[in-house]
Length: 449
Image (cartoon, rainbow, N blue to C red; front, side, top):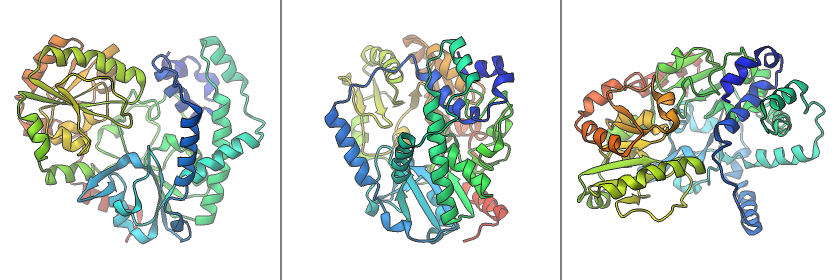
């Protein structure tokens, strides 16, 4: 069962449960992935090593805690990209520069790790891990009496869903106490977040304290994304005040949960396109092949297994095609065909610009590739890709396939598309002229450097 179906079926009961606002996001993720994940057998040594590593990462940028700031940015290290020899946060560092680096503190979650302070451009930065350790402590020591909700128990039992919602209630209230105390101490004027549904307690506390919260879009927002759409009218105290979106499509969604949307485009995509240079070593690797396909991977076991089960026969069937795998966090690959490689010297966008086609299940790179002039071929397993992107991306540059034959047929066709046509068809997804758009927004907010 999908979350949207569950909400329609039990609308009268769920609308009365305030906790449902944040529980629905956790349950939606669980329902999406529950059939595909394998159990992770992690040794005690690996667990201990991870805990020790996380403990020392807590002190990342520690001295930056001891200053006053007007603005706080909550993000994670997965947003960082290499620009001119240093790593930038692709969605927030430009905003930090515009509002004033001395006035802004970036609070970053390692995903999977923090980059060395000397290799990043961010001026004031700390790790979000101290909040996570405090949360764990409070969850295990704090008794919260309202962690049982009869109506939710009944719904889960009727639908045969095994989901531990109580831990999310405890987690929310632990985080709420931590963030409310923190915000009272620092008294920021505005908070920027890269993912609102990852930080419900922070946003709820900020709204209580009348602090503006701005979300910076980081990925796909469409009718299939349950965190941004619901048939229920939900409490806005859990929501950011403003969403800075890539384009206009986000504001056209029916039943969207965020009311105020301001399109700005993408700083990093515009930068990459203007400053792209071919990588000499990758060019040598590419040279013998007729076609080059950049493949964006996802981290769940079922996603990776489905993608490989489709692409391995493709790779073996036609040796004229090179597949460049673009992983997110995972690097545990099976033995790959000779015409399938991983190239870690440059980031995903620069790899895609070396390719004829971008391929994936439903990675958000499918939004970005056409703005760079590269068409998509999406593997439509169980119609996930077409449901996710069918009404969002143009059929001119994005094709959905289910068989090996369809893959090669579409590959031969889309490589002939002109870059300008692809980009024109994607202009509603990403607004042009990011720099001017963000200046207008900051002026509207009354934020000046």
